[in-house]
Amino acid sequence: MGGLLSLALCAVLALTGYTGSLAVAAAVALAQVLLASSLFAGGVVPTPRLAAAVVVAGGLLASALTLWPEIVGAGEITASLAGLAPAAAAVMLMALFGQMLRRGGRVGLTPGLALTVTLGLLAVLLASWVAAARLPDAAPLVTVAVLAVGAASVVFVVPGPRVVVGVGAVLAATGSATALCLVVTDAPVWPFGAALGLTAALLTIAGRLLGEAWSSSPAHRVPVEAVAPLALVGPVLVVASQLFAH
Image (cartoon, rainbow, N blue to C red; front, side, top):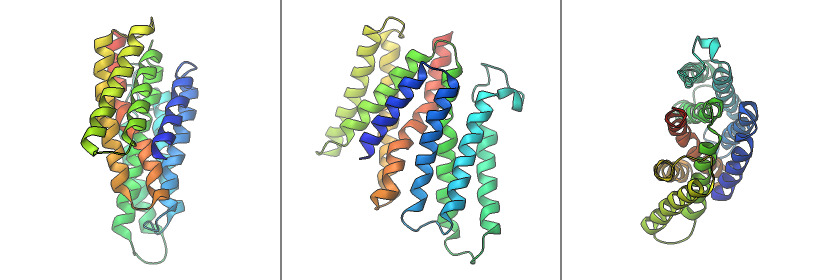
């Protein structure tokens, strides 16, 4: 389920990547809300509504600061990720104040705070896709990245020995990214695309493993499995897009 959901998110990001940064921000907001929904399952977080609000607010703040970097005094291109640090700090502060102000004692304080901050930071990292979309001529790289993430996510859910499936996921992601670069005229050269596909595949597997370790409850685990790979790949995509732009 997590692999198919991740594939659907990849398709949305690929379509919006050629539309503009605002459309990508809307797709990212959808992923951020989906990520926050995992807090309502499992009963680990005592105040799931407050925790989900923190996650979504932090993610939206990161996207807003990325869309309008002049708010934090950053430049258009050179500081495309400048909004992520203030948003991450805001997530931690909101999570702390939320725990201080909630009623009903401090039951579940540590796990609740840890889960909220972790998901909040992943939501902030998702804004990296908005940063990549703002860079010139970055749409082909966005397509390469989402293709690699989607391929790795689908293959990684195939039953079989974990090592074999992992190698298959890496090969599928790298091969699909390379093939796209060879076919599409405005895509980067194939070694560049292969390197991005390989990196995206490894980070996708890391995100999938994070989701699997998140909880034994599918309702709690699936959103993290689907969204965490995209959050981890986002900053790498921004760096690759900056290199490609130059």
